[in-house]
Structures are given as structure tokens and as C-alpha cells.
Length: 618
Ligand code: PEP
Ligand code: MG
Image 1 (tube, rainbow, N blue to C red):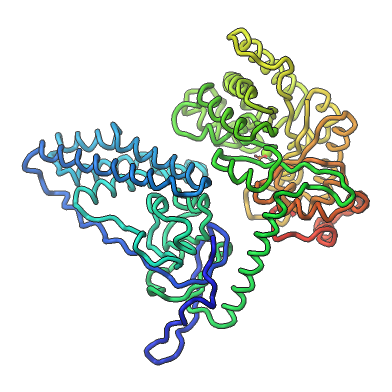
Image 2 (spheres, protein in one colour):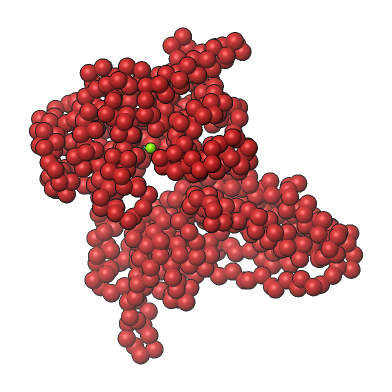
């Protein structure tokens, strides 16, 4: 998205004293990176009038028909939004489309509307009070509570947001209050709102505004996810935004740091312009790199794959030039409330991802429910699980699946069927022993036989069944495991955590969490050597692979396949294209002798510049 050049922007507003207003900085949460200099455009929304909850309707039938009319009008509005979607870039469409489907369901024969009707009948409420009361009750039921994990709390908060959004739409339609429109605001400015709702994001044409700011909002709510999909530089949760700026004020927005500079002085403007020029250069470089191979200067090729967490990432994976998916974390499929996804539902998702990769490899990792999350969820669904038993050292990953093999069987069946759509491998998480692999392979082959009996034509050689090496036990016995696994992939995130006994999720002691610790490096080296000796494919799929400074070391150790978050691919590729095999080899010899991760980090810095990416693994 083009940002407005500072030289084209109006001069800074003068205060009544004739002096240029003081520069100030507001702080928020950077959601979409990008530096923008432009005047701000404030978009206010008329608040809903106070609903008089004590009012009683004269005629119940009349309230029913008002509610039906408001629901019908809301459905038409959502249909219009859907129509607008066609003009959005492909990256944004999928995310927003999914949300609009949720809204459509809520405006159909939903619990919300049925509940509101019951309240009108039994509580003799007006349609407004019924909608408000029912949506509040449902939001309270669905809302986050302290026993939930952070991720569950975020999902629950999003659900609450959906109830509020539909209630707000119904109430605006019931009271005849108009909606906020962005279509007549000046173009090229920085849109600033008190609150940005997902439906608002659907209304924003990504080329209309240079950036988007909101005073409230989180990093993972629907609106943030959609802003990311649209790739508009954005900062949410900007404290003091609506009181701190006036329409037309000149701003610098930094979507990475979340800093909003109001009335920037000459120095701040010059710095921002320089940063914008650097960003533009980096964008051009990345566009150019996408088409170039990841080759060492002496010509040897390295394969760069993407880690995928959500199907919506597919376009980004392609844009960044990934040569396949090295780690498809299938957990997203199991996050929906209610029953676990059945074979058909899983098959549909895997098949569309595999087909969408056009024959490029896709490695699907079976469910890696970690810590308490999965254990609690399964207990709710009536699975028999021992008390306690969760946590990072408890029933997680493969152990959980082997304790409940029917979950694994369903997932294997769905993956095997989807393998007919392209090039699939299957990966097992959190392996610690040969027996676990053997047990899984037995199940895998049994499921394949069952499918064939059902008439499903599977290839004679089943898709490769490989393992993640992410426990110290697996790394230390890699020479044994490799005889039972078709490929190995090192998960440095967990391997670092378990080796160093430092939690990967807490910032406390984060300086101790480093894949450059000799304990972790030796385990990586042992694993790679075992795989190379057994002539088995070996890759790295933890965060460490996304660190361009680590590329030389990993290549020196013998790794030729790295899987990472899609946006890191061009940066790692750039680093690889500047390396020679001799340099990488010399570096790994030196690195394995070093005891201090910080000193090793400094050494890697000299071997390859960071390319602007910082990871927690360093
Ligand atoms: C890892 O542990 O390095 C890994 C890639 O798996 P996850 O991050 O999904 O635990
Ligand atoms: Mg892991």
C-alpha cells in the first residue's frame, strides 16, 4: 500500500499562539508493519441511544415483526458487505468471508434471534430490550474466564465480539440509526476511529487509506486479523487517540513499533522518510528474491518451505516464494467449540490446502495438543483422562493421541484421502521413543487398509511418515528413531525448551532460551548426522530456521531444508545467497566448540547480517 509522501502533505497546523504545535507520541500495539506519513481522518460514529429496558410493548406481534424486519435488513447489509468483498485483494477475502458467514448464521435461525423472540413473548419486552438482554446473556456464557488458556480466552473474546456486533447491528436497524460509512472520507489519509469492528474493516478499500488506527482493540481480535489480511499498516489500542488528535493533524504511524507521532518535527519527518525509503527498497528486494532460487554462491540449492497455521495463509505462502509447506500445524482444525472435527471436515480442509499447493510438498503434522489445552478440551468432551496429566511434561502431543487412538485414526484417514490431491507427508509430534513410532505406523497402515476396503484408491506406497525431533530423548536417540521414520524434522522451539528447562512461552528468563546454547546445538548436530548417515531427509521447522543469521550454521551442519513462517523466507533466502559452503562448514566447526551463546551469536552476526528479523531463538 502506498503511503503518502511527507512532501505532499499539508503543513503542520499552527496553534492560536502562532507557534507550531508540540510534537507528541502516542503508543499503541503495532498490528501491520509499515511507516506512513499522512494527515489523520477521524471517523466518528453516532452512539446508540440508551435503551429503556423498562419499556413494555403495546403489541407483542408488532415487536415480533419489528425484530424480523431488523434481522432481514441486517441480512441485506451483510449481503452487501459480501458483495464489496469482491473488490478486495485475495489475501483479505477469505478471512472476512469466514466472519461474514458467522454473522449470516447469527442472523438466521440462531439462538440469539430465537432467544430474543422468547424474551419478547415471555418477558413482554420490546424488541430492543430483548435483543440487548439475549445478546448479553449469550456473551456472558461464551465469554473468557480465568480457567481458560490464553488462546481460549482470545477465541472466547472474539465470540463475545460477534454477539456484540450482531446485537449492535440489530439495534441500529431497530432504532433507525445510520451506520458509519467510510466511502465519503478523504482518500490517502490515516483513518482513526475509537473502535474498529470487523464489519468496518470489510468496508475499508485497502487503497483508500494509508493506515488505520483505533483507540481500542487487541492484537488477535477479528479486526486485527483482517487488517493483517488486507495488509494495511495499522496500530490498535492507541491510548489517547481520539482526544489526542484533530481531523487533519499530520501523523507518522509506525505499524511495527505501534508509535504514532502527532505533529512531527523536521527531524522526525526526515527519519520517517528515510525509513519509508528503506522499506520500499526492502519490498523491491523481496519481490525480486521471490523469483530467485535459494542457492549458495557455489550453486548448491537449499529448499525453503513454509510453516502454516491457518488455511488463510496460503496466498502469503505463495507470495513469499515457499517451495512447499514443511509444517502444517493441524491444531487450528480442533479449536472450534463442540465436537472434534470428523473425517469429512478434516478431509475437506487438507484436500483444499494440498490441491492449492499445486503438487508442491505439504507435510501435515497430526494434532499436537500441548499442555493443558487439549487435555481440558477432551475432558469436556467426555474422554477418559487421568486427573492432572496436562502440562508441558504431561499427556501432550503423540502421547495424547496414542492414549486416544481414535482421534489419530480419523486424522490419518482424512490425510490419506487428501494425499490423492498432491504431494503429502505425515509428521508425528513430540516423539520420544521407537515404540511410539511403531505404534503409530501400525495405526497408519491399519487405517490405510480400512480405506482401501472402503474402495478408496490409495497409492501403493503410502505418504512418508516422519517425526519431529523436539525432545532431547528423540535427538539423543536419533540414530535409532531414524530407522523407523521416513524423515526427520527438528522442532527447535520445544527442543530448546526441554533441553534448557526454560519455558518457551514466558518472557521471564527469555535470555536463557537460546538454540545457540551448546547443549541444544549438539543435539541438533547429532540429529542431522544420524539422518544424513541413514540417508533420510532432514529439515528444521522451529523458529531457529527463520533466523537468517542461523542459516550458515545450519547449512554447515548439513541441513538443506528449512521450514519457517512465510514472511521470513525472502530474508533467509537473501542470507543464503551470500554464503559459500566452505564458509558454512568452517562456521559450524567453530560454533560447536563455543560454550557461550552470546559469543556465538556475535560470530553469526559477522557471517550473515540479520536482515531485520529478530527471533527469540538467538
Ligand atoms: C517446535 O517445537 O519447534 C515446532 C516447530 O513445533 P511447535 O512450535 O508447533 O510446538
Ligand atoms: Mg513443538
